[in-house]
Length: 382
Image (cartoon, rainbow, N blue to C red; front, side, top):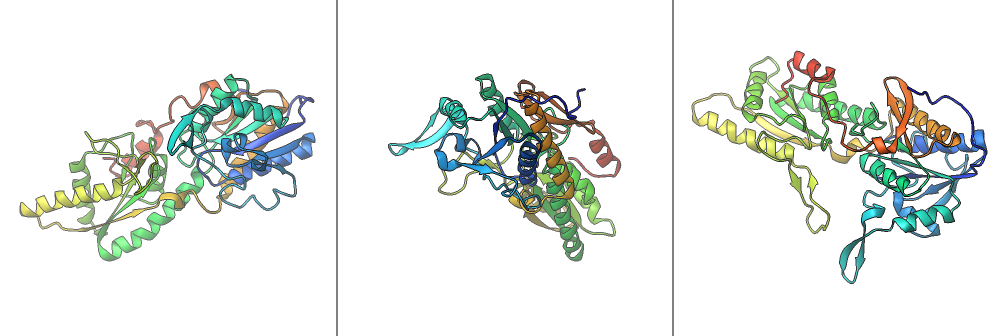
């Protein structure tokens, strides 16, 4: 496995770009800062910040800004991204209004031309699995790109870990800790819905860290009766309460994930609502049990953490890791190793071709150590 230690520098590089695509994520500014400081101080390159993801390579000159050591001062601890992000600016399916309706266009020629017009010898693309797929296809068309994986979901194929995940798990764990005290005070079941579309890493890690009674993840469709019976056993203990952590992509056996559309929005339906749906299913099951003579009755409350997991100050772990990735991306460019993504394998930073990443999401293996640990602690996984 190659290590991304300092090596031979390609002297022809003069100017590079950096963009943040997809959703925001704690640690994005740390990557930007590392890219700028490494490129300017070590190599003497110019750095251009491209605003709002790939949108900045589609729009005009105002979407690009020079980045200097001074302009990235103090951003290490800031959440979000100083460059802005756009999750809908896919150059292969660029959506815009034309004559009163929305149409999808392929604007990749504009992106390639814009990279040339700006004199960019390389572009650091920071994003999740969708962004890495776009980067892979653009590189195959000739764009000089290097990828840096990010997502709080920790589901990018090819890397064992992504920055933003540690912060998201910390936020979810703190929420579980706070909800536990009110659950125990009022003898309630608290359902905590966390992010995780296809991968349940946040739910699993925060559930173990917060001592949850039940953790439901997309990789393992749950048995409602099993969940109900485990809740009943939790209320028979001295705690007389329960914490249920459910990933937004989780679903019952035989059902599909829950989607919802915002009122008045033309966007595609988005995952969400499983927390409330699960509460409804459990309430119906409880009423059936009461009608059959059961004396076991408890109240259910639902908390949806949503975007609070993505916002705010990044953890020290995410700051350090994001900084390492940004510096490593610059080293790749310096060596002329374009069309690759920085990745963590074990404890070592390495890189792999974009052609090998983002083919499928990195989901939770049901025989992995974290799943076994949860089961051995008595956590119900449905």
